Image (cartoon, rainbow, N blue to C red; front, top):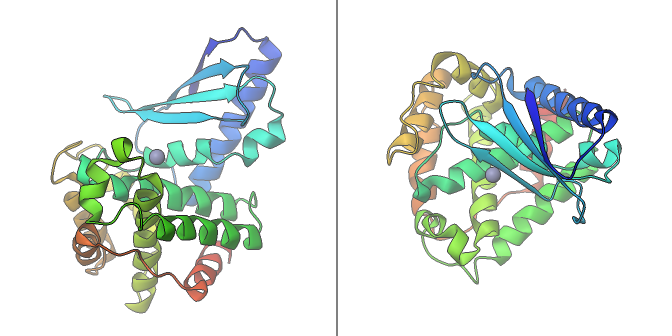
Length: 261
Ligand SMILES: [Zn+2]
C-alpha cells in the first residue's frame, strides 16, 4: 500500500501511525480474503480536524489501478481507527469488479458482508458484537422497505438520489449470507471467502468493468469455481425481489462457526 497525505498538515510521527493502521487493516483483510489481484493499493488520506468519527468517509476510485480515498480524523487514537469499519469495507471492494448501477446491491452487500467477517475473524468484533451488528443492520434494511418498496435492481439504480442505502446494502448482505448457507447445504468445498481468493487468481482483472453484464459474469465465475449452481440463481432472484431477505439467528451463528473455527 502506498499512502499519500492531503488536508491538514501532519507530523512524520502521525504519518507513521496512519501507515501502521493501514498495514494492519490490510493484513486483516488478506487473512480473510487472501491477497488482492492488483499489485499495490494507492491510498489517499485526507486528514480532517472537524469530524466526529475516526474515518468519516471512504470510497474506491476505479481506474487502471483501483485506489482508495479515506477521510481520517486527525485526533483519532490508533484503537479507534482499527475499530472503525470503513477501511475493511473499502479494501473489500477491491476484490470485485465495478458493477453497473442496478447491481450496486451486490457490490455494497459484498463489502458490507466482508467488512463484518473480517472484523469477526480478526477479533475486532466479539462473536456477540458480530451477531448484534448483523441483526441491527438487517433490521435497518427491513425497516427501510416501507420507504423504499419495489424491485431491488430499480432501487439500487437510484440509491444515492433516494438515499436508499439500508435497503440496498443489507439486501446485498442477505444475498451473501444465503449464498454461504446454500454452499453448505450442497456440500460445497469452499466458503465464499475462499472462492473470492481463487477468483483473484483466475479472473480478477479480466472482467468488463461497470458493464451491464459484469455482475452476471462475476456470479457465474463463482459458480464455476465452486462447481455448484448457487450464486447465479440467487442473483436472478435477488435483483427482482420486492421483499427483504429473512435471515435467521441460526444462519448468523453458522457464519461464526464457519469463520472462527
Ligand atoms: Zn461500499
